[in-house]
Image 1: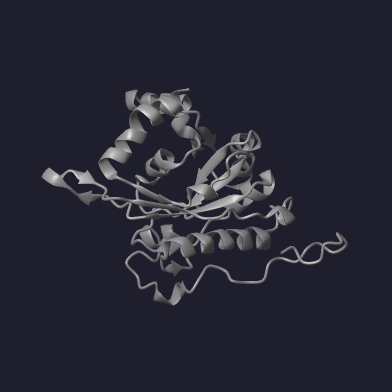
Image 2: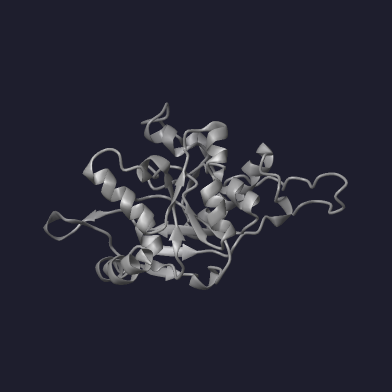
Length: 256
């Protein structure tokens, strides 16, 4: 209930009135059933803009610590808000625990919900598209749901009147759903996860036209590539390799 209250009465009208976002491809969003909505990430405002303009309710997995509300008044407010708008916790500690911690997200997909995810794992430091993490593939294959690629354009805040940050007419471009049912159940195969993730990132790139850099964005923002020339990792597109072969003996031939 609270999700609709915030969207219909506050965030939706506010985003449309102040920022005037435009949307292309709303018809590509499945009318029902579970799906992963995979977006590029260029601004802290991206989740708000996407949730405000899509016709269906969005669920964004948030790190489980935010749901605990044990670090003062503001953390309690954040925890209440996340629970009130029906978001789900995600364990991001890594390894087996993170895989097991995907349970609430998988449950939401199984219930027919839309789960929003930013495969780059961090905001782009320079507006370019970076290598996607394979969590998007793991979710899609384990839940056996399509991935809807979404490209965000112009969501970076700019200095507006009186120096107040604002956004000038950001764009949300929704692509056709990508189906990977023939690979369902193979979410433990590294090559399969990487291929699916690259296909998703390629679809996002085709929609938004960003340059692609084949390294993780956090390395450029915080790691050993901070301030370094990344031209050697620029590629025409993510992946581009042949789809993983079907398991022998399943009678289906190649998987795609």
